Length: 155
Image (tube, rainbow, N blue to C red):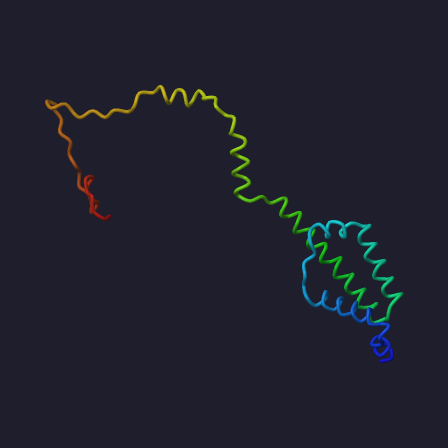
């Protein structure tokens, strides 16, 4: 209880404010920005955050020091999550970026392939009617409840 009364004194109000900031950071699940998470998620960044937390514990009230250690732990964990999300977003591209990439690959393509050239040269398929004096007559077999060929209704 003495630590609490010591924290309320006027000359220690900055420690009280720091404690409130630590509590808010711990309770409110704020995301670490990707640029900051990239720096914190390195071994040097983890050591720097740990040293700051230990120095907070050493130079301030023990309550604020414990809150600082917990806040540092949360900062490191949230930085790992933010860095993973950032790297995942870089690896997984959107459909629009894939489509733009494919358009860029085909942008300078003006060469006609052999297949396209041969299809263009082919004569169109022409369907001729049967001659009038033909000797055969087409017949339609039993339909077995199927619709006739020239049926335009709903099937």
